[in-house]
Amino acid sequence: MKQRIISGVLAAIAFVVLTVLGGWFFFALLLFLTIVGMMEFVRMNGVSMKHPLAWIAMAGTLLLFLPWADFGLHQPAALHMIWVLMFILLSVTVLTKNEVTIDGAALMLLGSLYIGYGFHAMYEIRMGDSHGLMTTIMAFFAIWASDIGAYFMGKAFGKNKLWPAISPNKTIEGSLGGVVLALVFALAFAVIYPDVISYERAIMIGLVAAVAGQFGDLIQSAYKRVRGIKDSGSIMPGHGGVLDRCDSWLVVFPLLIMTNLLPL
Image (cartoon, rainbow, N blue to C red; front, side):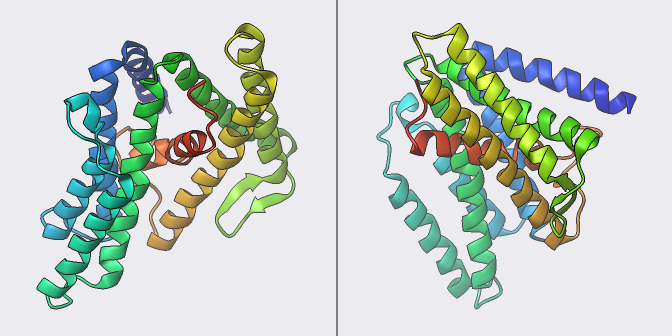
């Protein structure tokens, strides 16, 4: 437990500092998380990092993650990049005479999109021209508030299981507690910064962070259960891997962009 607390505090401090600094510091942090997260995904699916399939998937993940414009390059259409990656992965099934199956190719495409665009969305929001730092902090606070509210409300009042086949310890009461606390934190930002964010938008951000964030957690739990593993990795002692820690983020941030809720 002591090791878990120490590693968690140190990681949190480093994360906050790099997020506040922004720019290439935040980019380097997300690049690291993207690479490690994809390595975890590849290994979870029983593919060696030495296999060409893994390297193709990693390259595709980085193509979806990279902020091309910040490197002075033309930003390809996301759909075009996804299609090219799909074509290359499917071509590998032919070139290897089905040693790499279509199922394996599809999994790598899924992982590249899930992880590559998920972390790209975080960078896009943080580096937004309008209040990028504040909106990033707001989104993270709402996600973390949902986690905290769900944990303590579940411990205190949890009786009805939310989804026992996927995550036996989660309860409906805990889930609702997470939604409420996320809304409280989101509305607090609207109170502090009334000229930046409206109450209506704060409520929507809180709901997306809580509901989609909890789904992100359940998605990762479901996948680990299928693979028969407890953690996606061991990058942080006592905390598991990158995908264990970032599962909610990878779902929430893309949705905030798609729903036009952020940047403010």
